Length: 131
Image (cartoon, rainbow, N blue to C red):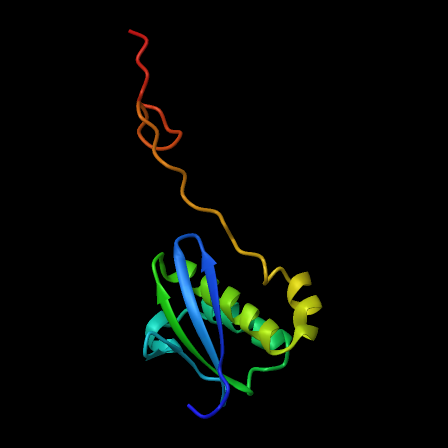
């Protein structure tokens, strides 16, 4: 690759996405597959992933290559969005105000609470019988 590529990492829950932004036509490849092939027909996820590019008017300027691991489909889409936002910030610092106000630079740290002993799940109790 002769052209400059910008790399960034994004995370959400247990999903991690490493993104490379390369000059291109606005295509997204996830784990070697096209976006539509990887995520299927989910317009909400597509809108979620393309949001940072749309806000900064870069939809037609970059190709996005992603390596995503862990979590589920929605969580991976959130991690990709976070990574793209961070990569765009590396590309141009002026995007910070736009991305920050939309909350795209904040890592979503919500993870499943661990199961406690003496309980069914983290907080759910076993059925109580008085008699």
